[in-house]
Structure formats: structure tokens, C-alpha cells
Length: 216
Image 1 (cartoon, one colour):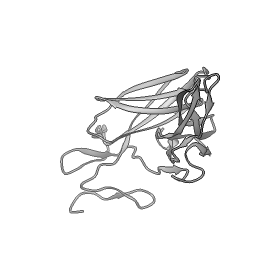
Image 2: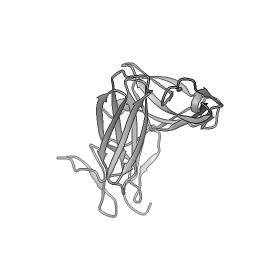
Image 3: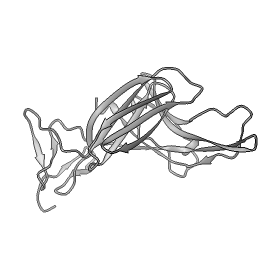
């Protein structure tokens, strides 16, 4: 580092240099509904954008960016119409709003990258081991407290009904019950009547998660 400020996390990891911008909390967004709940959140597409999601029901998460809008969706299996609450924690590399008073740090391009009010994304953990036996469609983890995950695909089921193929996606949920969070894969829909499932296509993915109590 030629110049600037060097700031480290509790574990010694440096997250501020003269050429980098920390990923920090843009906002916490909550909506409620049943079946499918989508939140449309304005973002700057020049920034890194990471949504971490949790729900109070068995809903899996997907997201995409359309123009300057981040669309994040929580969707239950089509056999489940129970209402649920869906919360999305959005982290970005946006320029930081200046506090009324305190500390502010700019990078060499004049972008404010850190203030005394910035909540920097830290302590991201991997749930499961990518490619391992307990990953993907076999991943199940119960963690004490309130945890949110980045939407990820677990795998697919491919089947046949009346000699015609069909496919059911499997995503991950982070279901919070008030004290613990269950992170596991759930099917996007039920098997059609008369349908037969073949061998699952397991992506053997891991999930990135954070303890969101650090950001509330």
C-alpha cells in the first residue's frame, strides 16, 4: 500500500486499502406474503451487490438484476400456501452516505468508502463443503441464532409423466423460527400426479451465510 488507511477486522483480515472498497450493508428489506414474495430494490449496477436472505417459512430464494433494480424472490413449494415473512440484507460497494458527525474515509478517487456508521460485511461462513457428501441436495444445517444466506441452486429432479419429461428445481432456504435457523434444500414444486422421478442432478453446492444479528 502506497498510501491510505489500513484497517483490519478482529481476525486480522485487512479490508481497507488504497485500491479496494469494503462491501457493506446498504439496507434491510422485509416483505410478507404467501407462495411467492418478490422485493425490488434499487441498486447501482456499477457496484458489487450481494443479497443475503432468510424467511420464517420454507421458502427458497432466487435473485437477478434488471437495469438498476435488484429483484429478490422467496418462493414456497406449490403445495405450501402458508404466509411467511421474507427479509433480505443487501450488501454493496456503494459510496457511503456521510454521517452527521464521526469518521469518514475516502479512496484516492474521491469515493467515500467507510464511515463510523458503516456496517462492513465480515465473518461470512460456508455451510457444507462444495462437492462433499453433505453438500447440495443433502445439505442440512441448524444454527443457533438468526442466519441469512446468498441464494444458491442445490440441484434438480428430472422425471417423466405420460412419457413427457419434467424438471423440478431445488433451492436452499434459511428458515428462522425465532431462536434457530434451519438451512436446507427444498423442492420448488411438488411431483405432478402420476409423475415419476429419476436420478436427481445434485449440484453439490455449499452455501454462504452470515449471522445477521451483527447488522441489525
